[in-house]
Amino acid sequence: MRITKICCIGAGYVGGPTMSVIAQKCPDIKVTVVDLNVKRINDWNDSNTNNIPIYEPGLSEIVAETRNRNLFFSTDVEKAIDEAELIFISVNTPTKTYGSGKGMAADLKYIELCARQIAQVSKTNKIIVEKSTLPVRTAEAIKSILDSTGNGVKFQILSNPEFLAEGTAVADLLNPDRVLIGGEDSLEGRAAMQSLVDIYANWVPKEQILTTNVWSSELSKLVANAFLAQRVSSINAMSILCEKTGADVNEVSKAIGMDKRIGSKFLQSSVGFGGSCFQKDILNLVYIAKSYGLTEVAEYWEQVIIMNDYQKTRFASNIVKTLYNTVADKKITFLGWAFKKDTNDTRESAAIYIADNLLFEQAKIAVYDPKVNEKQILSDLNYLDSRSSQENEKGITVFTEPYEALKDTHAIAVLTEWDEFKCYDWAKIYDSMKKPAFIFDGRNLLDGKQLEKIGFIYYQIGVGN
Ligand SMILES: NC(=O)c1ccc[n+]([C@@H]2O[C@H](COP(=O)([O-])OP(=O)(O)OC[C@H]3O[C@@H](n4cnc5c(N)ncnc54)[C@H](O)[C@@H]3O)[C@@H](O)[C@H]2O)c1
Image: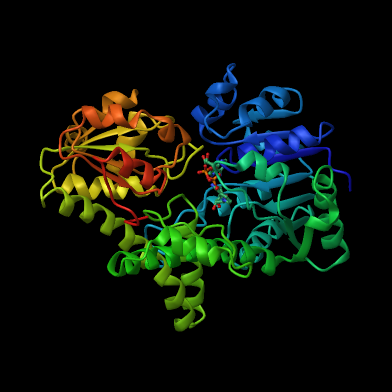
């Protein structure tokens, strides 16, 4: 079946960029992205595409080209479902915060709501595509809900997990390592898979479009994230050993990364991984393993999270220790709040947890991030529920100008690897700092040798990173 109308439920970090690229590459397909969040949809429809709600390099240009041509953003979920031949479900699947599986399992309430709404609204046969990251065998539950309508409408469920990385989402979508599509091994299942393959084949070479069974596809996404996060925790574990032994973790990582079997990517020590996916997907994997009674498997992967948490706490306590065991009323400047560069996403950012730790020590934190505003920073801290919002407001000052944030500060913590930080006038910054001045490069961004040459900045190599 040739698809002419697509609906995507969820206009977030995945739904927005993914559908923008599909609309650009498939001008004959009408793509409607819907969301319950009215503000988010209004922002996607902002006449100035620089104000769209998600910052990703290259995204606003694609939206400017396609919006209201064949890409539409709307809150009319029912209409878009009714019209579409193929529906992507791209809603959030956070870690459960209640009931059984609390703190581990994926919360599937948003997915189930989508399935129920699709079942209720649909009058014609449809292909339903799981774009969200889901526990293995979720398609079974979705199918059971959809098949219970009794109105004769037929649904095919596909799994098509998204492998884009935030910060490089557009480049990843335009040139993916692979596109993975899982479907049922039946005549109808294979036909549905082919319809989706045909969409991607507009720009992705056929040999990079993999088709598998649904369960392999669902599980592969969790496994991919677990492996990536595991590399970060592995090198971070080594950074601790390096500090004790006098080895330099950057040199170690370069030396081992040159081995083609190991490879150099995701091998840089850091303050720990953040973002909405790694932690939640590993927790989900751990939960699934536990639910099958696979204790050893669960414990093995759980260690990746434990190491990540340890690295963040260690980074914060290193700051306190270095500043003579007290940071009370000392200004400490954070460069960066987003969990990585080139995104405005702050979910699970290490900066939140470092700030939380330092606020317990009564530090005065100044923050500058080129893409994250004060409202977001305060809401991230308030979400932790460690202290009242008034106390958070007293402890944090957010700046829109970096040199103001850095003036009179006792220490700087580089927590996002924004390129612009590398171009700052570090000699000028040093002059404006309280002495002795300290810098903690949590993202391994600044050139340690260069800073050493300047001669007055304490550079904590390998710490947290
Ligand atoms: N962010 C990433 O880098 C990334 C990468 C790959 C996969 N994923 C997965 O993709 C999924 C979406 O992630 P995200 O980062 O885009 O989340 P997000 O929170 O940015 O966006 C999800 C959107 O879905 C909307 N929504 C929820 N229920 C709805 C409903 N019933 N009807 C209409 N809209 C609804 C929410 O309002 C929200 O705007 C998750 O499962 C995530 O694990 C994320």
